Image (tube, rainbow, N blue to C red; front, side):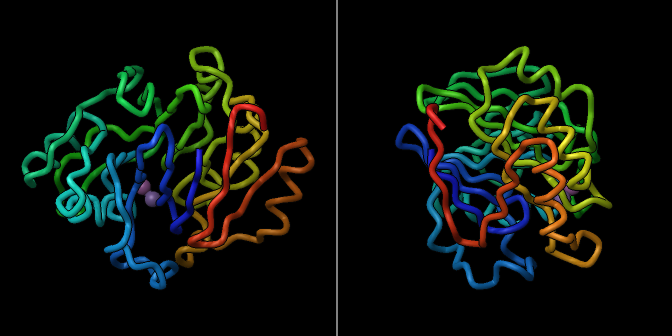
Length: 230
Ligand code: NI
Ligand code: MN
């Protein structure tokens, strides 16, 4: 599983020969202006929730690439109304795609599109196949529901957690989340994009180290490989 970070909550995960693009936010994002999103290919676009800093470029990239959009039922309706093919899910449900199993799990947050369209309830994704298992939490508070993930899914090889505070959990709560999901390799997201979520990165890493967890802060445009053995 190759994971490329494009800033904020935008990640491309390449697995089983498929490209999964999460929460594409390029237009209006001040920290990834150097990335030309016209070059990004996707087979699937996964939206955790409706906010503009997660959905901004979903429709345009889906139309350019022909990617299938995966999200909750209400966001699926929005995609279809915008001329994009979509797969509807809801919390606690999973589906077999050609990249593996995808489960839509709970998040505590809100989910309305910038134009006021109802985006249903926000969520996160757990995805697994023979190459491994990972969790993209989306925007969420720390919640005890995270303890259900190791009880109901294969063990995680890595997880993407928000650490920026104010709109989501901060890095201290995220380090507790790492315990709840029983995962030692955490990629931080949703930090430093704008003023409300600027963090002390050195301190954040120390807080994770104190729990024997590794907080990975990727440079924008950089990638990491994960597989079942690490
Ligand atoms: Ni949000
Ligand atoms: Mn957000």
